Length: 473
Image (cartoon, rainbow, N blue to C red; front, side, top):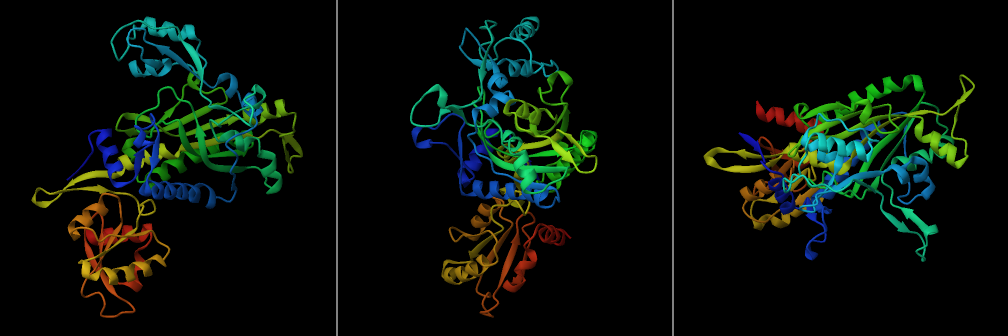
């Protein structure tokens, strides 16, 4: 029998204890809602980014990559609307001094109350007054006026802190793609439809971050801006919708029952969007946005063309017409998806004799370590290290574990998602050139004796699934 952690705190404590994530600047009592990724977290994040890139870029004939700078010319943010409109409506409780985002405060009271993105302060206050929404902390109804707070991190470029030198840390990766549209299209000789993909850091000075790594001020995005003719936009939108759902379930291991789609009502759409659908995941704190797809029309290229006075149109060789392409944008946060995967994969499993183990049921392609090499006893450490060194040559992520009893080592590897445990015993070296060992599969705990020369047959997602099926028969 398996059951999940009951609280977010239990899951976070496990992830911290085994080296996935640590509180930022912990020796100085930390920094609010900032996290560092430990050795296992780095491996898992890199595997996730590689898996995404392989599915949505490498395997597609018309997607190319980009790595744009974090600091852009401030005019980029003027054109995109971020300087004027990228803000949160803030409200404080006069009684307990707790600060809230007004829209999130209303949403937490009743999710059926729809708040438009461009709602005025008066409209927010009317909802608060009409529904008599009290402060969740002190249960009083004593609010300040609403004011707006820009979410971009401001800094200065150069040695002098002069207003002329103000720059911003990018709040999204998308604009770096839009301002490079012509550069990429010309240099790569691309014809519509085509996409530009990017993985990179973004920064938002969120007022109410929280829920572990779900919402942080520094985060990483994986997104594509797919440029196309207007008449094909909705077909491509639906294609991405299906592809993303299949990838989340098949490759990331998310349960379809823990996913749902939320289409934004017209009044909730961002100013640039004609249609937006979010995949929401059932996190430990409830259903929240995981992966978004937006139809951005030709808004972004149009505003950059207007302010820069540069031609960002596309010349269609077939129709001999020039026009501004429309855009479909699939976008997901690395940390948010990582959190969903860890929530889905991590169980406590009841075993025989009232024993239990923590099991991290990660997909093969995501697991930080595919193999853990273990000597049965410490006397065999040197020979086990020789096998370990040979496995390193297979270009597979492998760790060496010789601390504690073999049972404790199995449990330790199960708890971090290691696919196979290889045990070197006294029978391993009948053939010095091709040693044998037992290979133990994580989920079933079934063991099989194989030769080193046969190991590569087990090292893929499909091979692992086949081995699991054989063990379950």
